Picture 1: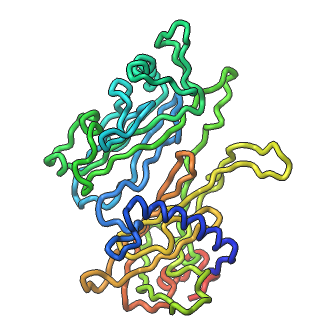
Picture 2: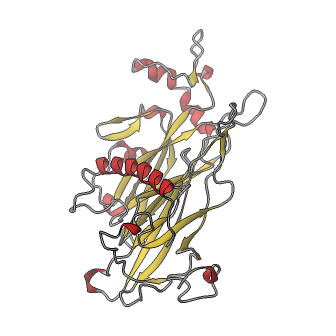
Picture 3: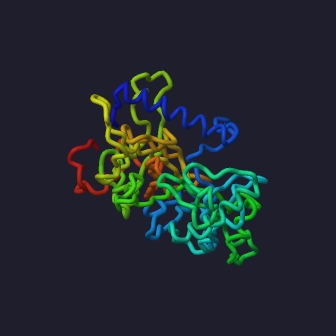
Length: 375
């Protein structure tokens, strides 16, 4: 177990406490004993949506979703759309007007581009006028002619990627091939159906052909480490049931509780946003945030940051008096600018496993870093 410095741990607790508080508000009392922790996956969930690259430009942007917890063997239905302006109406986050929606299809992945967006932006002045709205500062309209062709998008303008992902049983067993129908109303049930949106910046080269500062890449999760040892994706370690330290053991306050799971990202994942113009003031860079999920057991934290990324996974005794239980862990990383990545691991919980046995090195001492960690 690695001991955190008091300052780092304190900062982490303050930041994550705020994030957790927001999560509790959205789940109406997640600290209540009757509610599962937000890291526990029991039904279908969309943990993340990735755009590659994470912005809308002239070249196609490929979008995909990280879906977990779906009913085994169940077909998933997809609906994707792009919209320059979306708002919440009748319980659904939908396009301001159907004529502004760019349908991207019903496949598991979709492609979006600025060229497709421009076709609906031509309709923007008329739609805004009909609704008594003014165009935002990022979208300019020639006031003299007010022609649709005079609509121009500035770099920094953000559009919404709308999506719905559901199990085919929601639709009677057959997925509809109608994006507009699927996105017109909220999910009829939260069991097996998820809808949402993701903001994407529009990137337009300037008049000199230079790329926008909003051009960036997704962060990349290279691997996870488990108790300090690189955890291969194809290795399923056997772990003991977590036993909490005594409540009065103050020496454990700043330590990782449970198995230490640490995300490792590739070089360049934390990208420069802007250079500082003042002496002594650091440059502005991305700040990676990691979210943790599992289908059994709990995590010490719901989220961690790139400065102190490790988390503690606490395995519980197998359910329904089973001898062992296979558990899936998921980790999602976000860079705060629309970029994301994820990874998956599995472990086997066995109550007969000695608590002090290293989950990876106990089976294969030849793994990298095993000579640097304890038993």
